[in-house]
Image 1: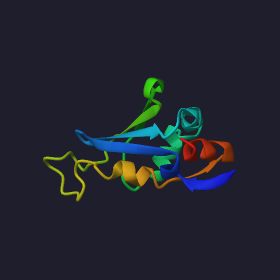
Image 2 (image 1 turned 120 degrees about the vertical axis):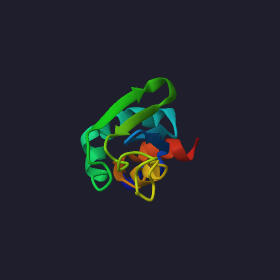
Image 3 (image 1 turned 45 degrees about the vertical axis):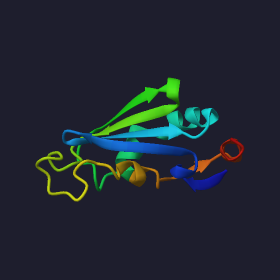
Image 4 (image 1 turned 120 degrees about the horizontal axis):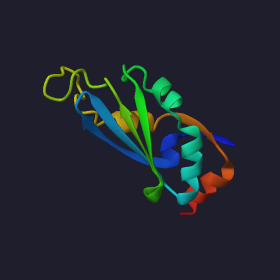
Length: 115
């Protein structure tokens, strides 16, 4: 096992959905998706993003593309057109989530490196 940033095994994209941000986390290798599905829980994302997300976190699984999509409700201060937040459209939220530390089996890290 190795402690790494989520960024080492996944990449992401994010944007706004009204007063919530939409964060997609995509496995860098098909073998990583089951690990993400098991370990990147709503609770864990909520804890990591608690300084940004004031509402509930929703998770949607997209196995066909090896991704998880999270909606971080109440994270944009009212939304892009009314918010005074620096990132009122949530464009940096994926980068923030990708800095979460996770303990990953060495074999998964090898899968990503040998991709």
